[in-house]
Amino acid sequence: MSFTQTESGHPRPSFIRTRIGLLTLLLLCGIQFLDVVDSSITNVAFPSIQRSLHFSQQNLQWVASGYLLTYGGFLLLGGRLADLLGRRRILVAGLGVFAVCSLAAGLAQTEGVLIGARVLQGVGAAMMAPAALSILTTTFHEGRDRNTALGAWGAISGLAAAAGVFLGGLLSEGPGWRWVFYVNVPLCLLALGAAFRLLSGTRKRAPLADFDTPGALLATGGMLLLVYGLIKAPDVGWGAARTIGILAAAAAMLLAFLANERRSPNPLIPLSIFKVKGLAAADTTWLIGMAGFFAMFFFLTLYMQEVLHFSPIQAGAAYLPVTACLALASGVASQLFSRIGTRPVIVVGALLSAGGIYYLSRIPLHGSYTSDLLPGLVIMAIGFGGMFVGVTTAANAGVPSNKAGLAAGLLSTSQQLGMALGLAILSAIATARTNQLLVAHTARPDALTSGYQRALLVCSIFVLSAAVIASRIPNARAAAQPLVVPEGAAEPELV
Image (cartoon, rainbow, N blue to C red):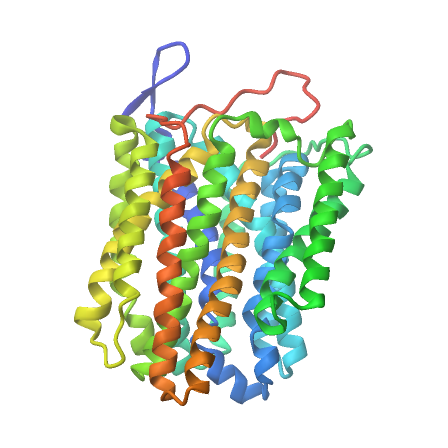
């Protein structure tokens, strides 16, 4: 049996090698898979959903955007509530909301019901994700155990982003698009049963009499407006009064939130967390990197279906090598931290990923999957697997255990903001280029391909920028131990 060192120097068994430890890790990674896969699983199913419920083209985007809106908007609140009310309690509540809304989405007979279910489903995801990650970082606290656990978390997150497209195509062409949502229900019920058996709970709760209500309203409202403004900007125009007004209101609310946190005796988000070395750099790296990574999937899927005329299943299957490479790279990267540290893994991973996406930006009109897509996808996936697990480890290293939910919420918020920002900016770039060529009477496939090429080029620049920012992350050679909160502290450590 493998052993790790306690603070007193005595060896103790590795928790991750026990049956309960392994099952706990599988549960937490499974929950993260559910959260991330639902960000992309509907993309390939869009045509089927549109035909079935008679969606307008304008409203169809909200099947995906509605989920991203509330997922990103409520993450900070969800992470902090996990710290204050108990992590298992918030995780279980989130799973319940997610399951009910998934069932409602599958049963939807109108576009309004489906969009509403997706919006509320995002709230459930915003409760689940930071609670699960904070449980992981406070449960697997030994160096090697924590590195391995975070490596698995990173692998599952990357796998889910790629697998969502495949599963969406498989289900929509098989039993039908409704199973894109129905499949979540038994998985949530299984996770709920496992959560009560594997995760310890507590009857105590932090005192809420002085809960930072103004901070909660300002943070959540500001985040919702920011994500909404980014989602709508490509449709109404970046220079439109509506876009400027929404983004200005979001900025005002977030600035008011920061001012409130500085003077609040019990802030929702203690700004002292940013004193944790490397936290801000890791979160910023992830925000910029996800802006390029997520948008890349979006444009490549469109290219395969609109230009190469792949079926939904073919387009989804095209990403299977990505899932394998991501899993392999994440596993290898997590074992390198104790030898060379997190920073080289993140920087090299981002550079590789940027190179792979640049290769993909050269897609031709009559492209071949084997020569024009597969090499770039493999290089990108290898790099991104290392980058993902490295950033996740760096963003949680040294965080006090009673703020683990907050740190997880910050990282997840960076991810969702990056996804929304990347899609907004890059959709505008691709659309502008395509429209410019269509006005010049260029054939539609050529115009689309040129737009996708330009967007993918900018995707590679985003990920390259993430490599530069990552050079500011401290080079931890092992995941730092969570700081222990003194007995009697105002914010007790809860699970």
